[in-house]
Image 1 (cartoon, rainbow, N blue to C red):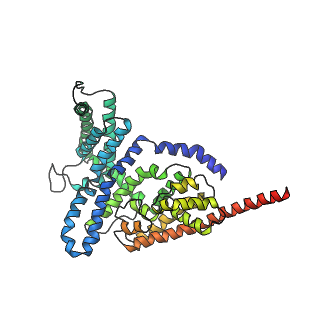
Image 2: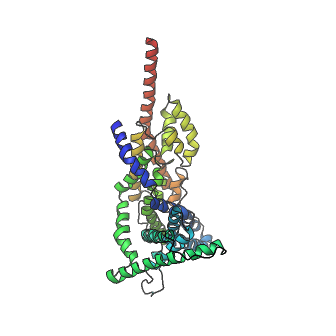
Image 3: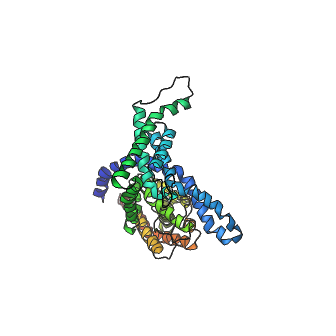
Length: 428
């Protein structure tokens, strides 16, 4: 075990740290964080239409209000993320973030097909703007922003006199870089259309997004991602932040597809979504550490340090915040807790996957704040279905049972060390 830890610290941790600070991945992560209020608003609108407005018929006439909210949030998610990623990437470079965000959004529209079905040129179907265009939006935002930032740094700009207001000066400075960035994407989309008979949007969707999303819906891949987050945490790296760009890119479209299907009265197509993990796996935070806290209260008699940290970490753990446990217990580089901390998310993912795929529990389709307590999150994520809450509680009990033997082992090790020290004192 010691050799394994040494190997991982030498080879895995430096690579993981570089990934966690990689400029483009950080921009994608922060881009999703930036549009989260709108995702929550759209999800809340779907939830209201499927619960309260359905249960109380007199409110049925107001469903159009929630439909409008959904239309301005979930239905245009890719357009929002194009702006947000471009903004955050330029901000990371120290360049004009607002201009880059606007240019990225425009570039995304430039490569988006402007015809659908019987509708001719000049019509943009909302299906191109929702989560199915997420990969295209991210790629376009990165390309457009890279072009924009590099030209700005090379000072290929229109310079205005010093007495011009700063906002006007920045706007004119962005003209040439923005013009070139938009035209590069426009030419690329044109060439793909003429030479390949398809659009950049369809090319990315069919060659990149659909295969990756299909892979991500498998139980093994879902278990792998859930366990990998904890592996990062074990070495003191923020696993959730490192994996957020990947998790959001793969599983937010699945969530939006479920929400759109439910909104239209259809069957939700995906088992695993972004909130699937928050509702059923991250119970008290990554590694279901709220279950570890309960296991400590149940079985730890001699580890006063464990019990003290558990008491301090309980309030935060109830709201899915587990840094006090991760770094205070600590779990980081703790050889006793390594095994349960890594396998718990895999086991919980498997149980939740089977329960959802078999129809015992409905699919998740509602975004709730990640700080939502255990059970309530599962209830809300499934649109107010009690089975979602019960599944979360079952998973919580399973996590407690997995942690218990290792908490008992840690307790026995302290007792053994105490007895050894006592024997030495007696001999002296």
